[in-house]
Image 1 (spheres, one colour):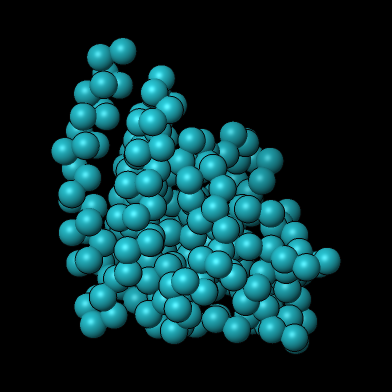
Image 2 (cartoon, rainbow, N blue to C red; image 1 turned 90 degrees about the vertical axis):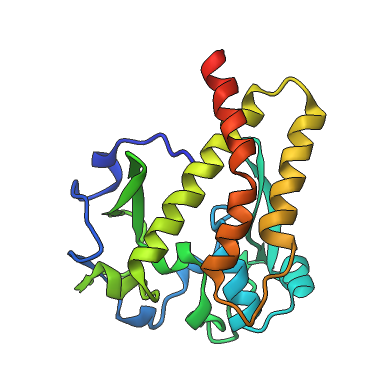
Length: 229
């Protein structure tokens, strides 16, 4: 979640909004799948990713978590990430031609690359990672078009809400002296946001925020504990 780097070392020094143009166009990544290999546990998925892969991509939830995803600990919080497998450490969604078999419903971090997010003041802006993408001669494209999600404003608000909620959860777990409390928080978040199926007959955001609101009193308690220290 937290990445301790200097922006001037990894970017072109600019911050972008969704309506800005950025040199990120990769020509549909033809002939290249470098960013789908050897990524370790860095491609973290969020609840929307799970919903889209499960409901729109029609990947059964059990198969999704047993075959394509794995869990790792990120600053004390257990989160799912895309699993890299085989001698080439490739994403399981790559087909024999090195193309993404779930491209229409690919996770948010896959949509974002080679952009990143710079979070501050309850929101974020985008930045261009200059040393990550293997493609050269990238073209300019509007950020919102590049990311290609319906209703970009709602999506960005959701991304911010989820990010800062996880930071609060991580801060709480970091302060915990009781291992059972840390485990309880992790199991609550996993079951509430990832493992309990979403209703395919309803849009995602309404369901997410219903679940999100159930954590509001708990989150307030976390924050009170933090301020009292």
